[in-house]
Image (cartoon, rainbow, N blue to C red; front, side, top):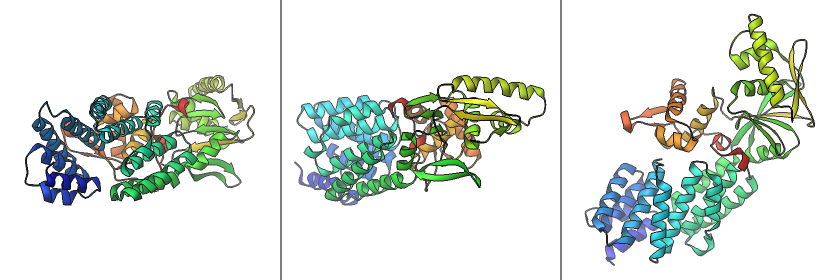
Length: 413
């Protein structure tokens, strides 16, 4: 192997892209182009990195199967960093199999870890966890072990298993320190901060009225494991222990359930319920009739867990078995659920296209665009670029964890 190429590769392996560029910056052969592309990716210039890696893949030619597959894996990693999510899983899977079949097991495993990260990013937790179990981190270099444990921590946090997440982050930190790669150490530190940051607000009614209290993921897990009736405004469900009633597609009913949950054990006046559910003032009998209809629907929907009783002033929530009602509210309030999930994805500080957001959330681009327009009006997000190149981003939202707002099937939790 070319001595200069080998030295540049070692520099990139320990996270020193500047040293690698000093060695190959003036070379245009295929290996040098690939290393320059990886170096630019580590420096954050993803556009330049993508172009260099594409040139390298073409320059290697069809006979250099291993080299081309390595370029494909590097391109997929750049695409993930740039939040270009279309087609990444199949490309990574095929490239990883090609590398492992030809003896390059380290880069093959790297491709599988990247595939897990892609699945995690779009909320396909079952597939991500299944593929992660097939990788034994003890057999591979420290950098791969750290990436493996970071993926395990991400899955555990999304499934609300704080103890497992903490254990995985400790192991990830040990592996990152052994690898001596600053970027990995920073990623572990950021994930640890997310685990400790407030993931939701618990709203209960006390002598001083309704009092929201920020809580970390571990306390959210305790609330959901308790026997309390939980009105979850992060996932838009009402639940008690393992019984879950989804209301994400019925926003009026959820608004009424949340208002009743926040006031429990007191009742909620009719004019307040009309304002919360319909964004109207109680003016005439038609509003009262509409409220009665929706309360009837809510009563039928919540029947397995709670009743809804009329009072002279309004309505009250009556749990069937629970002795306490708790409302879990998002750490940051927005108008509706799609805005919340879009904001959670953008909270990582990366720039996203509307197509990538739609793919990650499982909704169409038109819905994503409406949510982005509303968030932009409130100054929470901003567009970058024009036309097809337009992307959306926001500075990292410090002080809270977006875990509960990220897309994930509730039934899997």
